[in-house]
Amino acid sequence: MAKKNKANKNIVYSTNPDFNYDAEDDGEMETLAPNQQDLRVLVDRKQRKGKEVTLVTGFVGTDDDLKDLGKLLKQKCGVGGAVKDGEIIIQGNSGQKILDLLLGMKYGVKKSGAF
Image (cartoon, rainbow, N blue to C red; front, side, top):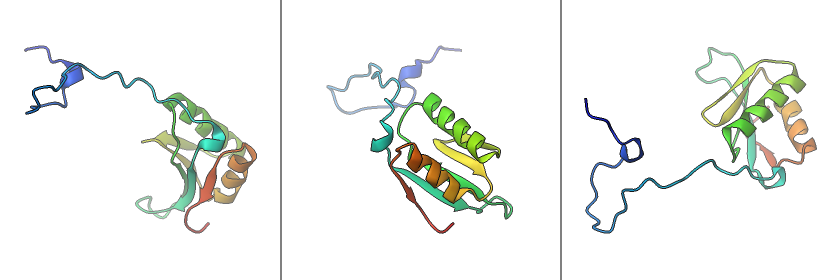
């Protein structure tokens, strides 16, 4: 089996003769300061068998910083949750509490939907 170049796995063909096939070094995304973040907090129950969860979306930064923020929010609310696909999922309807916590930490945050 031939070894595949992981950097070019998404590039099939390019008609541009000047196209550079070298992997672009995207690296880790820098985490924005809390006052520059544009977070959205919403309570959702779609495709969750009627159970409510609070979602925090719109975080711009590294996965480690997102996990740290998720861990802090879960601890402050005293509930479980997860960090998946760039969003924080908190069990239960903790929308207003999370909104207040994020505002207290100087995050740019808005309520999305009804709590």
